[in-house]
Image (cartoon, rainbow, N blue to C red):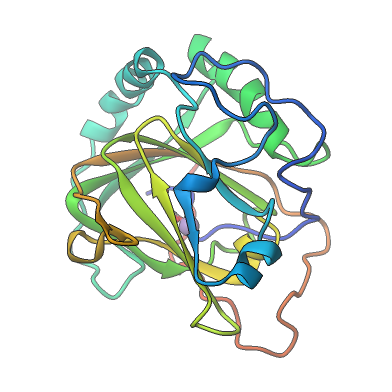
Length: 254
Ligand code: OGA
Ligand code: MN
């Protein structure tokens, strides 16, 4: 039904911490002025990995305010409610979910897209159509790399309702991993190597830890933004095994 997980492709990773200022957001609490993540929301398996992924994987807490989060949920709930949670495909990358796509052309969408722009390369902005993924408390997204056919170099996810943990693991060396703590209202961004050379997953309840901190899973709704693939996808892994891609077809455009 949905068009989003088998999805992405490569591009030129622009640094997270570029010189473009993040437009003022009404999100709670002060945050870094630039389009970069909050260091306390990311845990790397080694300092070397942290250096390597600097600017390529991060989370910004309080990207939207509680009022905006409630408004976004109101906007996407009717379409989500039309679907039933899918639990039967345990062999697939994802379980306990329903999803839809939403053109964020409305008032809030109109204000959200420009705020996402600094996190994307100028030549490859986010598509205006958000992938809306609703995970029930027992749901999880298994390790995968978004399809390089359908999506570009940057993935940005806005998390609503429940906290969760996004884990990335290197395809080259599985000992290399990082955890991102996704609190409600936060935005995570994966780009370049973090998007192409690492799997990402949303941890199921029993595994849902950020370091020693247990992160209980409730229902979580994510609005995921991706950009379009470039003409020539990079081949970051050379002769290493192919990407693990979600086998599902993209959903029909509505
Ligand atoms: C996906 C995915 C992560 C999330 O749908 O491809 O990785 O934040 N989702 O829900
Ligand atoms: Mn994904």
